[in-house]
Image (tube, rainbow, N blue to C red; front, top):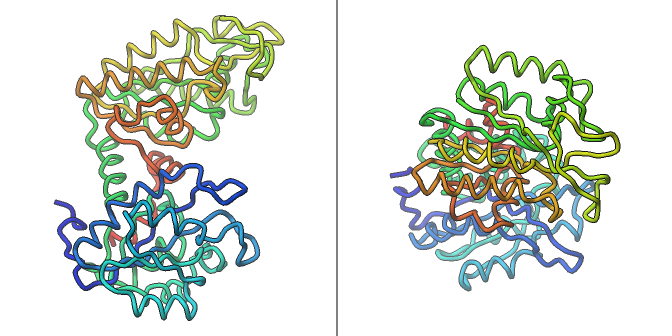
Length: 398
């Protein structure tokens, strides 16, 4: 059983770092509450034990202190609903007089939401004195914000030093994220297939190189595939290409061959004569795309080829879409990958979907509950798979 689940929070004030950085529309209405929902089980467990919860989070990127647009007060009513009507109080400053007063008087079963941490520049600077002030608000520190684990900020990495080893721990979101990532990277059963998509090779070089040590198969789709195609002498028309990364692409292919890792590139593509939802479309070999046309999705043969590789896999990591799935004409490939990952999972594979666009895709196509784990931390998960240590994790483990 986990350290968090074993701990009894009765009579304790738990200072919980959450990731409530959710999108709002012009009327301050939340348009996607997945990050809030993810941490509700952690909050409810503490309350059910007879403890109280002090929540702290960043919200947006305020540049000059308090800003109406970035106030966490806009989330209070929705948080009350998610917590089935629990008492939620709000402090209009995360370390000021209201935070100190409200946290001191907080009763068992109650929740206090602190104002946006980033209203203080000390948060992102990892300021020790700021972290210490935050630490004094609670008896125990719980980090449940995996999405910020790669940042050495005051509330994620610095604050933990003010709590003894038995008074600092991961929440359920962090535990799930870390356990799933560890399972893929260090206990992954083979065949292990990594599906890497997105626009740029430069964004994914480190993750691909790290995966060459672990994966048996690496599927490359999205705009980045055309850099590989051009590097091998292919004609890619107006497709996305990083001309300064052609040598890098060749190096990756050579390294993969030397390590016995099979790199799968899309044999064909859905091509368009404009980057538009109303563009004319056709199908062409990915290395023979006519001038004036661009690849915006993997083609029929590539879809079948990739799906077959995925369905025989025992471990699957998916980071990045296969095309411009936001446009209906170019979403078939990404949707087909989601179907294949779900099918492999049903047959016993362990599948982890991480990275903003691939998470958006599995949610959009309705497959989020048919994969083993959907990560909430885009940048943090990416850095973990690049082999980097994450300050927010190290702070709890040290």
